[in-house]
Length: 466
Image (cartoon, rainbow, N blue to C red; front, top):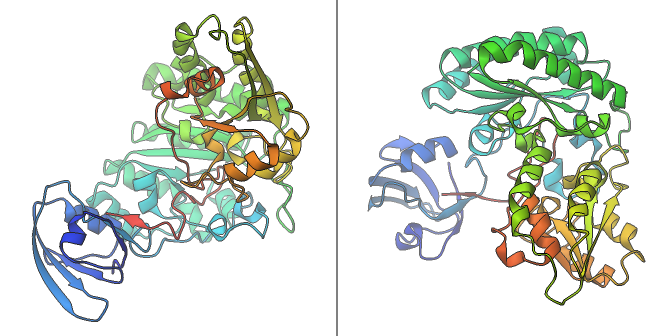
């Protein structure tokens, strides 16, 4: 049963005198098992609430509220009951590649279809029984994000080390027949699910369009902490070019009939292949930017829109900015900032940070750590006014990096102020110029690591809310 962890001030729960430790037993006579039951039950104006108090008393409360008003409580778990953990042992699992001294929440292996529906986590469906597939349909839990990787049953069993994983096409077919939309992904591992296997997976999935509305292909992420694991290697530049060629060939084949590209290569492939990302039309509705697909194009397009607002001079003030990014984004950031070279009084220099913490094969900005930034900037930024960071590096409300360094600690170590801005074209441009007041509120990122079948986007003990 949902157990309350915190009651928010001035909330409906406070008015009802609910308290931490109380459990929500039923709403309007319906038992509450998880966050999905709770969300549906709360969508009403008149409510009978059965509560089991921490001292064992049972209260029946008659409640009148607005239709969309929640209780105003945080629960112990984001799913109300316990988060479903992953039963797989994927050959590429990122959690297996995390140092053992990391904070506990980074080692959580969740594979929970409810978090896929509510928060966009990718799940494998290997722990979903047929009655739960029916529940997804009955409660219209759409869209879902599904990690497919391969539709070859034998290969998927080997890659996920789970004998139930070979059922994926049957599961997708059932969901598609009943109107559930899905976004799917392939984590591409060279010599495993590339080449003909990649073609097979695309060929098997595209007939389910528009229920299966997108398929992303992302390169496997490998850290230096792979000990006792399957032998995997990163994609080579030529293999990245081959993936792009395969994806483009499928797009040309499918677009006349689907009126959409359907399958998309992640930005990392273009960086590795040293190729320009495609124009906006290639990405349709940009349905998988959270998975690293079309992020560079979105960034460049937003930068172009913001460019007319850039001044010609700094109003008599000088400003020198150290812009921090990861290796994969360095070229794009440098090219973008080169357009500011003619602004009098402004100097902006890009500092690509090599990921020593996870290893040099991890090149995405969101996985940089505070200690790597501190070590590699030491002695390099004398004379700079500020260090500019994109907020994608920070993982919770306290401005904490993945290695538990805080922005405040980084500032002390560098002896420089740190300016954190949205990881967007506008964020880079206006942050560099010092126009942070013109930026929208920063987006908050939780501990989401890509290229694995665990979501980590709702880390326990972060409570669920209602």
